[in-house]
Image 1: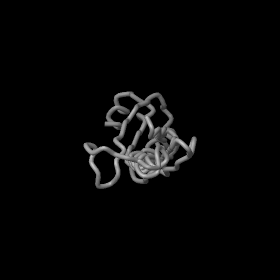
Image 2 (image 1 turned 60 degrees about the horizontal axis):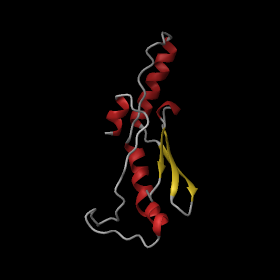
Image 3 (image 1 turned 90 degrees about the vertical axis):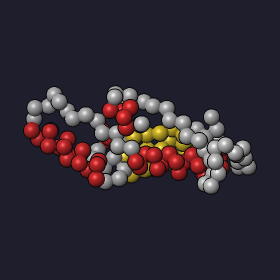
Length: 122
């Protein structure tokens, strides 16, 4: 859904994920004794990192460029982005509430990078 929306021109999206422990269901009342920190550490961060590893937000080909070298470079970037996984890094914003910025740097260059803000307590 994220990739389809991107292809339709929606570059800023809100994705809400149910934060549940492994082996639990969303139908059960979930208690997080460690609060937002535990929610982030046990569910929010792993889910978001995996989502960003899977998403390929490939920008459209440069249609206006007539330079053959630019077109070849763009095609090489696209191929790298398809073949190689992105480098995913997490930076905590506030450690007490579990908020973070998670970035996936595409192998083919910054035009296909993806970022996510994580707010497990909302």
